[in-house]
Image (cartoon, rainbow, N blue to C red; front, side, top):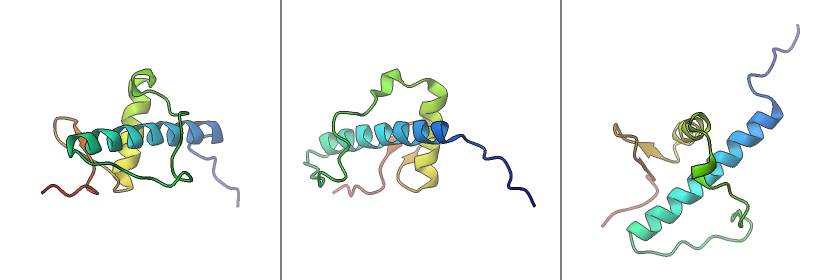
Length: 91
């Protein structure tokens, strides 16, 4: 039995994960500012300055990376397309 062809190439999977990281950390900063709190991450988890600005992602990649984060349960997207992080507790 032959292995089916993967839906994504390795380069496409890398691009999707890099874009999803950019979305995640951008949203994390936004939520921290909105809630007037500081987020401390171990250096191992912090991507540094290598993230792609969201404005430079094409619309299809941006939507797919957000959908990927939704499937993982990391973010929620409302009917208006606004993303939020269920990890944050609002008081």
